[in-house]
Amino acid sequence: MKKLSKRLIQKIIPILAAILLLLESSPIRTINNTIKRKTTISTDIGYVTDPIKETDTPLYWHIFKSGGSSMKAYYSCMGLVVASRQGIFDHIADETLQVIEEKSTGHKYVNVDTADIVGMIRAKRLGLASSGLADIIFSPLLTPASNMFDAQHQGRFFALFRHPIERAVSMFYYRQVASWERDPNVYKPDLAKVDIEDWLKNRGGKADVSNFLMSSLLGKRYFSEKDLEKAKEILRSKVLVGLLSKMEESVQRFDTYFGWYENNEKRSKCQESAIQKGVNRNPHESVEEGSEAWELLADLNYYDLQLYEYILELYEEQGRELFGEGVEQKVEESTTITSE
Image 1: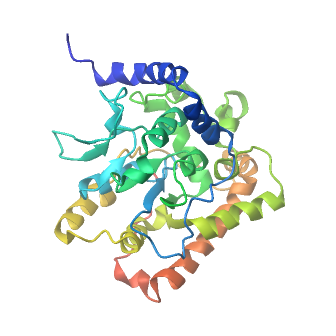
Image 2 (image 1 turned 90 degrees about the vertical axis):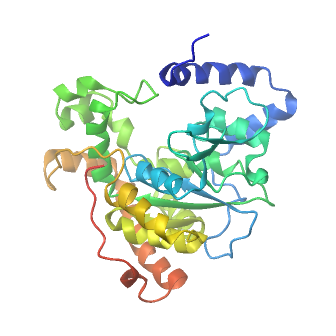
């Protein structure tokens, strides 16, 4: 039998996963419901200011078009065992966890898919958090991801954040070219024929970019000032924040916080290839502040823009409280990235 192509595997994974879910026993359905129904961050996520325990697992919140692909490449290059989606190919039916080594790169992945809810149900059932196999987990779904952990094996959140309007513009241009994306709703080549204003007004762009951060943190789409304060508190207490506009400095903080300094020579090479050069960047036109497109996006991201201003403040606060005065001088001037 011919070996299945990665493209074909990507298409059949959701089908196989759905079949597996139908076959699950009652205890697994309970796990299913736990992950699906909770709309707030689990209490099994450690506080940023608490000491890290050996049983904790770092979880990177992969906010699309905010440097996540570069971060994934960096930590894979560093030799960390990664749980994301990469290790699931050819292993969707595995009934035990294992570490898969990619022959071409030597990168190591756990055989789970933490990029969607179905995959996280399976990861929780197999005991990903308690196994200790993953040095780092990547997931774009913050709230469901938080429910993979338990009181004895907690998650520790960290993420890079990007200006909401810059991120939204990047998403618009990315959709035009991303033919490699597994989700058929991502790649939209017809968008190359329209301008961003038309996309926002008439082609579903509003739902795509409206207050993405708030929705991810709170599991809802309509907000109040009280919701904004709740989102701020989640970030303040549970998330080590980094900035795409200060990516190198942010990575310095992440590595310091989690103790990822075993191989400084490799670290320097990985930073050059993954952080400085970047991965999955898509150069594109920018939107001028004050333009119609900018104002449309500002209106759609009313709460996210306020939350981002708080993230900028929180970044400075964490720098002082967690890393001491002068942490900014430990690395060279960070490079602003606006075209991922």
